[in-house]
Length: 468
Ligand code: ARG
Image: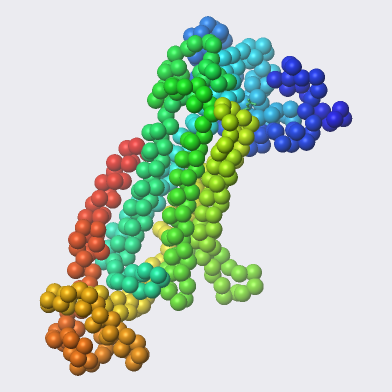
């Protein structure tokens, strides 16, 4: 153990020997938690403002510390190499560099603070800040979907259940479905921001700091609404990260379902969609291939986001109160989820706004069988109970399948034998346009409903723009 030793740690007072290299490999987190540097420095400055009130620091000492911390951040961002192999995590690394730069004064900043409340504060701040980035990306995608819906409001396409043609819909109706689910995804981040608004700093290691300061001022300084009510709660719990990463995983799952549809729509068999070359890729062997890789990756990454959530959940469950080192495992999955979802949202947005939608193909692929429900509905309007109407139309569709024709192509006599009185008139009435316009019930695919949906979506974006 003696040959592979590390320098004395900041916490090393009671230790006779240094850490084994294998333990260093297990324990050190700087390579990933450097992601928190901005929040760590913001947090330290706010804490030091509190320490002025506790008379641990003078205003001029605060000034020196603040300037030095800001300089460290600036140096880090411009690529200056700051860290060395003894730096365990970002929190200790910043404190070491600070102390090297301003001397003993740097050693005062950790007064009344533990890495436990420091890390809980930094991490919560990080998630709050990134929530706004995710919200912006969600709203950008929603606004692309709304524009597409507005520009193509009356284009028809087959609607699907079980990947079988089900009923005629407007293309805009499909896009607005995507808009509204993304809006609930959006609200999960608003809920997160509303719920996780308490400042952990001042909680110390677990029992609260012995150097009182007005925590509400420190909270305000960092954009939190209030100080936490209980120091054990504040440093122990990671429900904030569970909620945040599950909200991201849900967005991933939403995107994956649309990505799956768009992969299908890009096939020759569907032909509804041509992705721009910029969001496709070729095959290393088959020269003719243009693959919808953007959508396949969006679909695939949903698994990774769920994996991140699951690994976090597994690390946290059963961890004893208050802090145990298990909790250091909370960060990597969250960082990865944030980076991933921002890329996914941007790619989905750009891929959809640059795509070519092949409306003619959508229309050509619409099968008359899409109107089977409408025929049953017409029979109901003429007085038949729905179950009988369903049976009659089912019989016609079955008969048509046997004869390898569309049910609308069966002779009027066959319809009449099946129990439909005025076959000719009904055939003339049935059309895709007729079908969609029968569905102007609120939320339906009819054009009046689409207009209501568009208005609703516009007002949602307007209201949300004020918060994002
Ligand atoms: N890097 C650690 C983490 O992320 C810091 C907290 C260490 N605290 C402790 N009591 N050893 O959780």
